[in-house]
Structure formats: structure tokens, C-alpha cells
Length: 222
Image 1: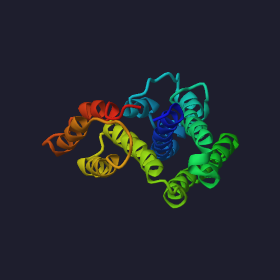
Image 2 (image 1 turned 135 degrees about the vertical axis):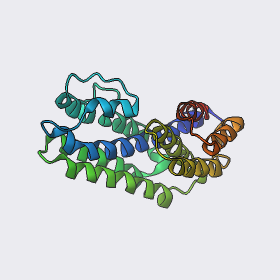
Image 3 (image 1 turned 60 degrees about the vertical axis):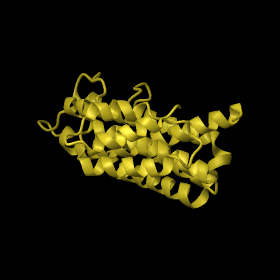
């Protein structure tokens, strides 16, 4: 592969990962939002612990503002959304303007959410835009390898997050099976041994969540 092809493969993979990261963490944050804004409800420390991100927030008000909207916070939802956007912009020729437009729409709604007294409405619109983006990947991108690399990034990120969130076996195994069925149809460099280990881990009597995270994070050379 040429340098441009290698760079684009990397961008496609991370576009998939960042878009999934926004989708899953935003849904988790939205479900926690009402409890967090109550005077005696919610605990942002539990939220941080569930995602294994550093708790750098002095209180829950700072958490609500910074985790959702601060570009200075590398773990924030908006930071990950802009990372998805930066990759999508560079891939305009590969993914098409219509597919890109849904990431742009998500950015627009995130900016609206920051100014709104009712951000949950805009959070739902961001979720809808990410879902539409994935639908457009299937419908508008003709090249199978391009589609599959984005989807591999999405699956790897979801398995990683689901393991951190201690999701049940059914949820994780479903995405491992989907990952296994698609990754061989790409030009990604990945560990076949690691893929088999991932399958074995989801079949084990007890799920070893830290090991699942370790294996899935080292599966693809990107």
C-alpha cells in the first residue's frame, strides 16, 4: 500500500472507533444526566470509573460541563466527536459528502446542546445523526473494503467499551462474532491468534473483562 492508502486506512478505522465512542458514551451520559443534575442524585465518580477514565472533575457540575462540552478534555464527548469529524473531512472523497454531512450535523447539534437549557433533545439528535451516518456508510459507500474498515473500527470500540462497562456475555459475544465475520474481508493487518483468543474469552465460563480489553485493543495494527 502507498502512504496515502495507509493513512486513509488508519483514518477509516478511527472514524469507526470515534463515531462509536460518541454514540455509546453519549447514550450513557444521557441516561445519567437527570440523576446528575438533581441536588442529591447521581455520582459522576461512578460514571468515570465505569469507563475507566480519570476523574479530573472537582464536582458533578464541572463534570456535566466538561465531560460533555470541553474541547480541552481529551475524554470528553465533544473531543471524540471532533476527532471523528477530522477523520471524516480527510476522507471526503472515500466516504462522500452525504455521509460526511451527518458527522457535521452531529457537531451542529453538540454546539446547540451546549447553549441549551434542555440539552437532552440535542443529544438525541446527535445520536440520530450518528445512526444516519452508519446507515449512509452502508448505502452510499460502494467500496466494500472502505465500508468494512469503518465497521471494524466501530466493532472494536464497542467491544472495548462494553467490556469496560461490564456488559453481559450476549452483548459482547454478538459484536465479537460480527467482528470475526468481517475483518478478513478487509486489508487491515490484524492478529488471527488474537481474534481466536477473543472468541475463546467470550466462551469462557467467566468473562475476563480486563483481558478482553487488552486483546481487542491490540488486535489491529493501526
